[in-house]
Image 1: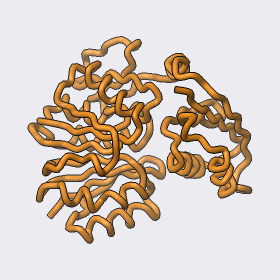
Image 2: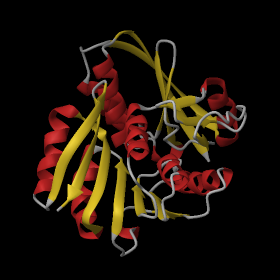
Image 3: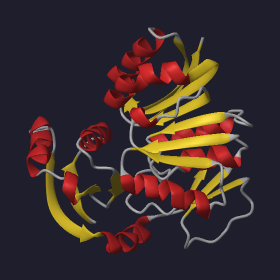
Length: 279
């Protein structure tokens, strides 16, 4: 498979503006983002890339900031070389250590996760993934049945498994993410994660103790009714992939209409993760 890399450089941009641009790019299929010295690179598989979609998004930001961008086609076999140059180990709350296969083992951390992204979103470095991992670290997941929607690399499911979750279903509609989830589970010697490729239509008809959904606002709003139908009474949902304003209130309203009550939220920059409980 071939990939398209779009690299943006900015002369002056606010953090919230860059986050908004990333969010819009994610809406049209870009699924991996890397920081660079003057901006960031965004990646999408060649079959999903449409130049006109990119230009439509950039028109929305016309006059707000100055930028340049380049578009490069890269082969899948070159991906590892690219991310190895930039992937640094990540420490979450001094408890969880996320590393690549080429980083040394660090036994001082309670939980260690080995991730090989292979073009799949979710190495833990993005604010949304970090906050979701913080919620998992704070929660009792022992023995519980967990659904991880938009699983990416399966980093959230892997952390929950390491904390003693009973069984996990990890779903992503990107085949690369699906394959990455399977591979990363094996890398971490995790055998109770079932990876599925698809969207809400492939969710197994079971009742879940916990649902993890780190996607984006529009997909969450579309899928919340399905989550409400498969979540146990008293079960928890952890959402991320959206902003505090105006997204959080929209998520609250959609959930409350279905008997899922807001508890609290975390915020890093403009990104938010939130916890809800089904009545």
